[in-house]
Length: 465
Ligand code: ADP
Image (tube, rainbow, N blue to C red; front, top):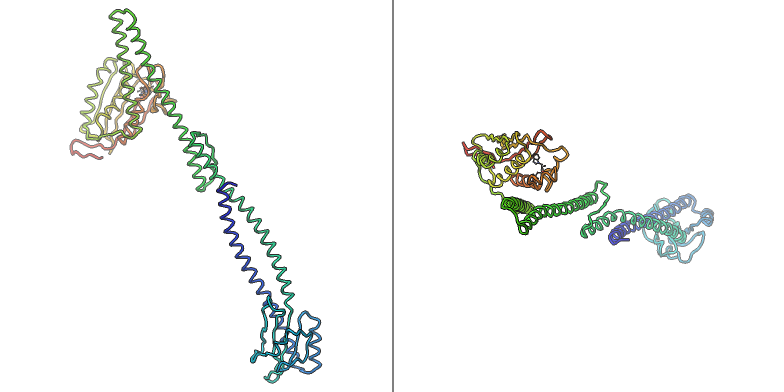
């Protein structure tokens, strides 16, 4: 038996043993006492009935008749006169002589128990006074050998012993079953946590039930699944980083080798250098993004909120991005409600909007439209970035905010994406206490919606933080 169930078993057993012993002792004492009382009462009643006969005829014939009657019974009678002189008896026992010689003065008419110590004495005894005209003329002594009571008690003790052994065994069996049942899930959980600490997250616990133990198994089961998921995520994350870093480095190395070894025309040299610069920029961007994500994971990412004038903020964005949209012949408009302010970190909010607009720019073709709409809805600010680009397939939509998730692995890479732009957007929006959602129909377009609290107006400078 394991240590825990042994401990539980011993505690149960000691408790039940004490309760059972106390109950058995109490039952034994009360059974014995009531049995002895019954014997004494019947002895007294027998003496009183002899006394009733003798009160009617206190003569020799009646005396010997009573003595004769008693000689056949398991009790004995001794009849004395008022001074204790024996007049008749059914059987003479010398050890009972003391009772006649040392007669008590006042004996009630209903009689008296002279001896009830059945454990030590050879007899239990009662006395009943015989009265005529209110005066005592003699006594009826009744005796009963205590051997019969001893035999009765022996039988009772034997029964108690059998009952005690049987109930003890049943108790032990029940305790073993119960303590094992109680300890089993705990042992399972201990083994599961040991497994987890060794890095094995394949834990299968029984999580059925409604009690606290089931809650604990549920929690451990969830923890193992979570740890397993985290390990898988870390593995994927690391291999994605390795992959993302390897690709631009391969380009850089390849083109540097070509530039170094071959005699190239100036035009070709410029072309290859441009590729190297582009890949280096991509690498720098990737490293910056990864650094941001790492800081967000560590919670060491600081968002310094200040009231931002939305009109000014979006005008600035428009100025920065319009040339790129124009170059790709994408129609780009910004519609911002006047006099709105938002409590936000200016550079982080710009990073959010830039990431989303860069995506719109990348996934729209010439002739498409990208619209930014900024509006106040009660206490929230809604920023919508809507494009009529290629859209996102329905099956990819739930994953696009995951790190390194790209819809078309090869093509998006060619467009400069590494799949962490939206992951950063999500983290930054959450860091501002906001929400980001996406709605997209393939080939029709995509809309990202951002909701932020802490909107105010320039008029009254009322800012709800
Ligand atoms: P990337 O840097 O590759 O663009 P993101 O995390 O920004 O990574 O986006 C993840 C994926 O979501 C992209 O690979 C792209 O397929 C899809 N996506 C994001 N924005 C748009 C958009 N406006 N239109 C179509 N697809 C988009």
